[in-house]
Length: 228
Figure (tube, rainbow, N blue to C red):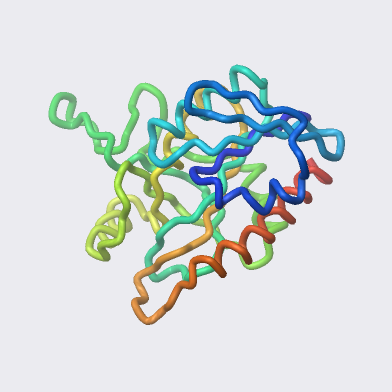
């Protein structure tokens, strides 16, 4: 793999990695999207902050695939979870359900099932990349991600998503990125750091969480550059 695309929703999710990579070789602006190009360990890295939500994430993903011919797309960011995870835990996403996609009123298909594209409501991520992440990110856990254009914080909604799809982690970009990469036959890595969970007794100092996990993510990217 020579060309690697990294997508985060927010700049603060990639700021530490950008500091480590140094000054970008160039920056390209395409409408809303600013793509920064880096070179490290013989690999080209194309980094973009998509913005929040499925539409922006899908557009950013297709853009870096088309214009930069990436061999791998990495999505990193913060996400909610149920009691399976604690704040600060790292989830490696094994599969994604786009739970807001629902055509059942006209075709009786199950919600979240793109019947013409995928065999299941759960859209699998790349198995080789899953194994690499679980072997190289200390303490990481596998998870199914429920992804839609709403911030999930209601424990009743979390229970419904778990009961329906086995989803234990929730975000607003993962489905779009997974679907677009799958349709383009590009392997993907989705890594989510838990910033809120069911346990109301846990306190999250978000600034400290960002600082700590950003360093962890930056180190993981270096492992990718060294080993893939």
